[in-house]
Amino acid sequence: MQNRIEVFKQMIEADPSNTMVLFGLANEFQKQEDWQNVIATLEDYLAKAADEGAAYGMLAKAYERVGNREKAKSVYEKGIEVSLAHGHPTMANDYRMTLDLDFGE
Image (tube, rainbow, N blue to C red; front, side):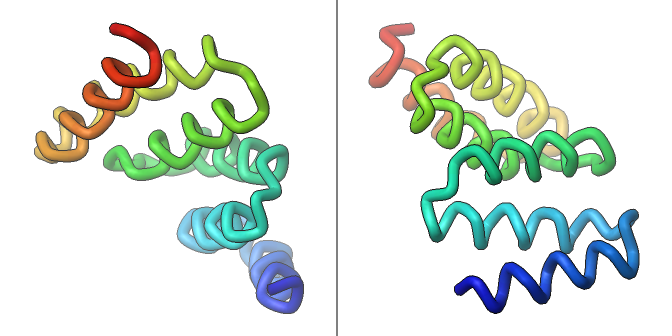
């Protein structure tokens, strides 16, 4: 796994504007349960990319894992908004259900 992370990092160094590589790197960090790096990478990704909703779920989960429930809740809420705006009602529903079950909304 570490080797894949190094490959993604090299790709980002070669092309820092490649947001898909950032998303891929965040996914690799998630596989390792490296939540702080998931957060940092996805925050960078979201600052540069017009995500359709998936990154928000991954980011919210990472915030939950590090114990920042308030930030996780706000990221899920933003994910609902973004996924609906991009025509992904099922994703928005998944985020709503998570808020209902895990956050008592």
